[in-house]
Length: 193
Image (cartoon, rainbow, N blue to C red):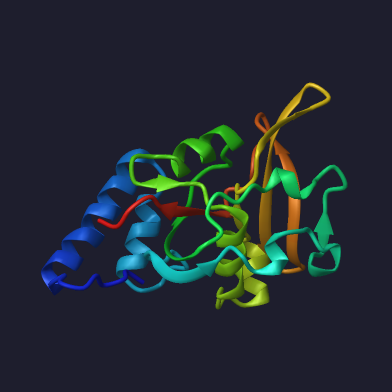
């Protein structure tokens, strides 16, 4: 759902949505089939959603294993640095692929001129507001590459948060690893268009 900016006319908002879809089609982060399903209102693909994030919430200052289905034992709070603990509005995008992408492909798609990777607080707030059913999350989990880029025992990886049909996970994924093509990846707008 595109958010309307104060002063935006309906035409400006429509042009912004069309531009977003065109850019995503060109860079491969949106498949033509997904765009067609979206146009027919049949797709889980969503337009940007704007939410208020408060990075100073106590739950973002530590990792409570009770809040997650799984937490990789190598992860520490330092692997999820928060650069902005203030209250702020964040606009989200979902990035999809029509193949099993590598971690590097996802990072490239989520770090563009207009997008960046979310921080953990931004991902968790988005997860709090996901309307998807447990069945849909089982078929299309939502993943946020929101943590640090690490090297563990010579293995280059990224810390991530995931919401699937079992609940929330905090994990590590290697750069050479492939993700299932059904996964949806969370990105955040760097600035409003």
